[in-house]
Length: 265
Ligand SMILES: [Zn+2]
Image 1 (cartoon, rainbow, N blue to C red):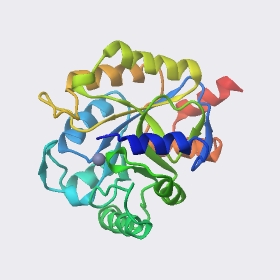
Image 2: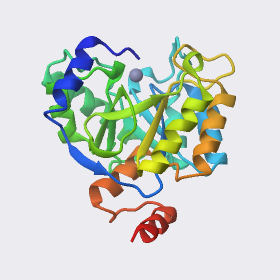
Image 3: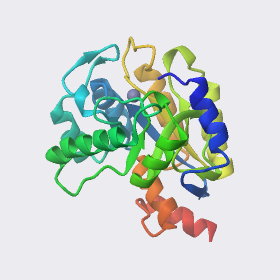
Image 4: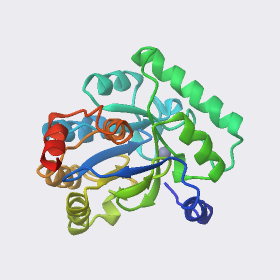
């Protein structure tokens, strides 16, 4: 939720030490919608909107938040994790307790990841280890980036921008979808850019509610962006996009992806 100067510096310096270098070249672009912390409305409202448009989202889940009430409103209940998974959404990792990974010891980060993974596996089955991670608070250090980049296919930060051309899968960039920052023209611009530059635009928010928190957006805002993206490109969980990027096309999740690949061939 906050992006500090040290996180910014780590990103700048990290530019010379990419954790997981890769190349995004998705013909016609691809969009992902991601929710951090997993407020209940992210699934009941945001997830429903995505499904109506044939898309699926990514939920960066910190299991200690299950059943709690926070400034983002009511958080997910444990049943929501399985329900989201059954509906085809991605359940991803956000540490167990929303740990600030910037200052944490690597052993503590590892333990949090393991404990969160165990809690998720208890609900989703043993072979469902999360493929994706988002840094709580967007807090990145070089040490955390290296440690986590080895464990997950992707790690998502809160640095602003489009993922196109050479990227760092250990610090994916986002477009913030918050009510108080909302600018529909800007949102459309990023989707147009993804389309034009064969890029991957990853939107990021928390709750989706008529009166959202300062870290969320309204259903109308969310729907407008999802609809605009879905008319132009596949809307896929982070895991599915990463599988294609890392697998070089071997794991293409959607028929649309295959069509895109054929169109580019
Ligand atoms: Zn978070």
